[in-house]
Length: 331
Image (cartoon, one colour):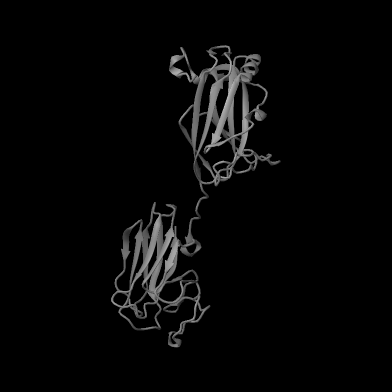
């Protein structure tokens, strides 16, 4: 039987101390649940000898949300409270909890039950005794995760204030928004793995050319540094037009800065336009640039953007379109 809380006269979930789900952040470097399996039961790992942080306890009754970090250990806490130590222990004997994390059951919750502890003014400003079940979940990978618990009274329970009838049941749930590692204040785009690269000639290169040109007059040899107008770009990207470089920024950055230009000792062709796309929208297009054109410093906003695409448009022909993205930097 599943009872509606509103049908129980005088029901105050914060007062009688039944059927709460708590998430405690802190203590120990605990084992992370393997999020790649939908059938694997989360398994705890013994706590480390040193305490990392004091726990941060939250008590969502239902449909609550919390934000935690990918490196914060988590303790799933279930509890039962009563007016006296005897009533707390007796009631806990009749409390049956089941819990799941992202749909995977937590087994053996009874092994994590602790003796009742006294906490003054903890139930509607009244003293109470609490029995806790503390399950060390460990860390969770970045993303959204659901922790759900089902409370069932296997017998009629009196906590000193109110009575719960046998069979009473309620489901509690908390959504954990787990944040990933904070991005550094500044990184080079070359530090991010591209989702895809396409270049019109040679091999996509970072910092140094990864190929030797088949035309000896190009003077491009594998291992040579990327240089434009006598400036070396140790984090520069070579992408001969027509080219398309695709990156995922995960919404973590606010600004892209880059110097654009062509290898200046290979002079032929009708030039290149450098184009920057963000989430499918064009946010920058350069004038047509030739090998003789001076490099241009570009600064554009990428705030909240995910899909970044760098395009070198060859115009009518792709002859000598040795496009360089000089040290693109993300902030």
